[in-house]
Amino acid sequence: MKLIERLSLYIQLTRLDRPIGILLLLWPTLWGIWIAGNGTPAWPIVLIFTLGTVLMRSAGCAINDYADRHIDLHVERTRDRPITSGRISHKEALLLASVLTLISFALILPLNTLTLLLSIPAVFLAASYPFTKRFFVIPQAYLGIAFGFGIPMAFAAQLNSVPPVAWLLLSANVFWAIAYDTEYAMVDRDDDIHLGIHSSALFFGKYDVLAVMCCYTTTLALLAIAGLMKDFGTAYFAGLLVATAITLHHYQLIKHRQRDKCFKAFLHNNWFGAAVFAGILLDYLA
View 1 (tube, rainbow, N blue to C red):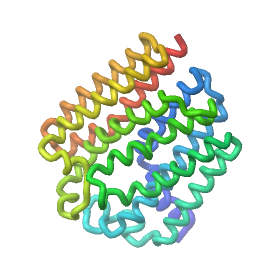
View 2: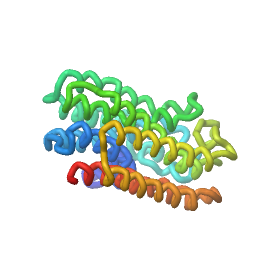
View 3: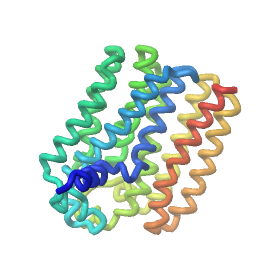
View 4: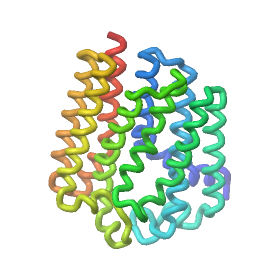
């Protein structure tokens, strides 16, 4: 196989051609970076965490496809993935994930000891998440912790401590992840039932739409409390207001549980994260 073809397979395996996962991981990390830096974070830290986000998300996708290689065979949407189709071997996928993780770890070596220590649970969360759908009824909650662990790491990198507001932001991210990944799970509900794996869409059942909206509401409430703790002003809460309008739009998309509209709502969460970050950025600029 030619090098360009091999690189194309690696891009598919790591979902670099589908950046929504990177964005959903990056936005909460940027929330933490900007708040920990009081609006003026050190740019080397911004660069380190941004590159680390891309690398760890890519590694997580490779591990996810390895973990789901037998499941993906039975789902039309995933049966042509590089591992499932046999174009990339299991060992090659794990090697790629390991290399990406090591590069990501190398990026944070110049940072303080607390950040290095927090990277250990961060790697464990990213590597173990793909297996949680086999025994945890709401794996999306675990995803929220994994996707939000850049928040306490961002505070540690700049303050050498993790204050309560960091854990509050992480909690908000957990509820946000349950909301958007339940929308995603509503797309795959029939396949998950057939394969006997867990998802929040199955756990919530006929109350899935209500649960999604409750999770969005909780996310916004926790973010509002965080804003009060940091004495944020009008710009920040205007960002939350825009995020609230986005959640109402999502309700219109998912209320009839149509698969294409649920997936559209999932993708649209990029704008929710962006709205919150814009509020943080503008408030510090003001």
